[in-house]
Length: 328
Image (cartoon, rainbow, N blue to C red; front, side):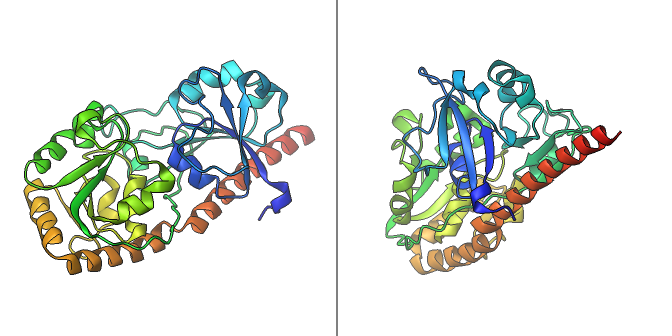
């Protein structure tokens, strides 16, 4: 394991705030570019997440003057456009990793990933992601999510469900906008998150979310096709029962009726939501079982350890190739 005083210096973009926050729990120096007018990947630390001092904002014009150990790409724009605008040729030759957060937006099984390079490691956040993408010749690995247990006890005193998704209407059927609206006709559920307009209660900042969430009876996840949402992992770690569609990676995490409720029939899920609303003891039992699962699957130390292994392997591979070239 790398010594704390020799922390990896990682350059990346602020693409997925929650994920960046959990990654920053490791012994890494993380550098993110910032522009005065912001823009995708360039709005810096922001005010939503309580980043530590190891997450450092760098004006884009200064990026080329700094030394990094690795470059972590997190979007097609990062990989296809941004790197050529703000990194030097030498920086672009550093060990590089592409972190894929999402399932394919096009065909569920035939979409070719934009990275097609045997020298780039493609990290997927779920096994489902890796299974669905056509990864061609790019080497891949999976690092499951890791989240923090904030120690806020689950109360469940509010007889409502909670949905935590940003811009749900804009993201449409893929994220289950129609299912949410149908459920809301008969089941009391609140929608939290940015960009939900009159249908939502607004954004709840990450530091306030654990206490806010603790009063709700259950978390509802209406998503048809996506990666395993961090909101689900966080709720399970909190001891809040999760009700969701039996799709994508969620079927490997929740065992129906034991540590949550999943099904492809929304009517079945409505019945289970009513059961949770009418039976607080059932909600606590299901939530506690889900918490045990989360502690096993989403342990933050395990998550950081897996990233450490990936970073060390990438650096070692680069040094080995360089040594072989010089000796040859």
